[in-house]
Image (cartoon, rainbow, N blue to C red; front, side, top):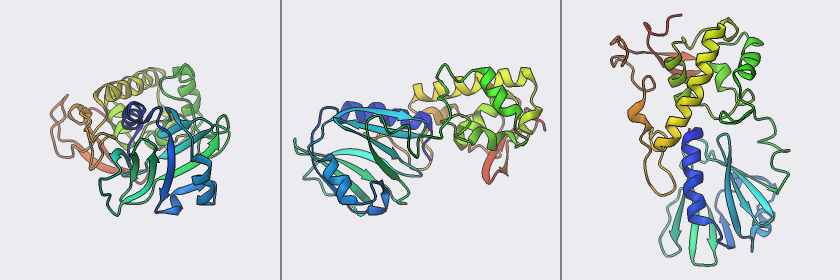
Length: 275
């Protein structure tokens, strides 16, 4: 699933591609993706004639702002946006098409059909699902070391599931939790409220640093992720832990191991991240 760095890369690219384009019509081939409004025709009618003014992001969600509305889009496992000329054929995995007045089309393609779209009037998007329950952004002033400490000291969950909880703070997924924990020297099965003040300080620093580096590199290309122009992220070349089972630790040379924590495949170094 694309995490904050990948979604931020898509946001930046989409903003360049579709800003100021006017929506002439919309084709929806998979109605279940449209979560609000319930009736697909209402979704289509609301956006006809609207102009895209901006593209934002909240955690792992894209927010496409038009003249009147905010379209909250979650890519889930394999969702992708791309801009195409209307003459170019589309395949069976293209489920939503935004037809623009200039003859171009913004197409949403999703092999697994897990992506979602919620349409709200501007100003309502943060007061309704799915954004209402999200924690602070990791790059925001609200995400302080004190905030993270307060949240983690209140839970006896293992640290990895605690960090994956988007109600605590947003943006971390399986890849970047493994990376931040490795860089912090914290075993993914440690109980969250057992971390020392020094460990919490380092963890906070490494969460922000890891995500910032990944954003700069355009995210990681894992499995089939690419951004909306077909470009791949390069942060996978910087990974210390995720996807490196059996490979030598870049710090100590010990073979990395993989286990399951909270139902998620988890990579760690048994020497650098002792339990």
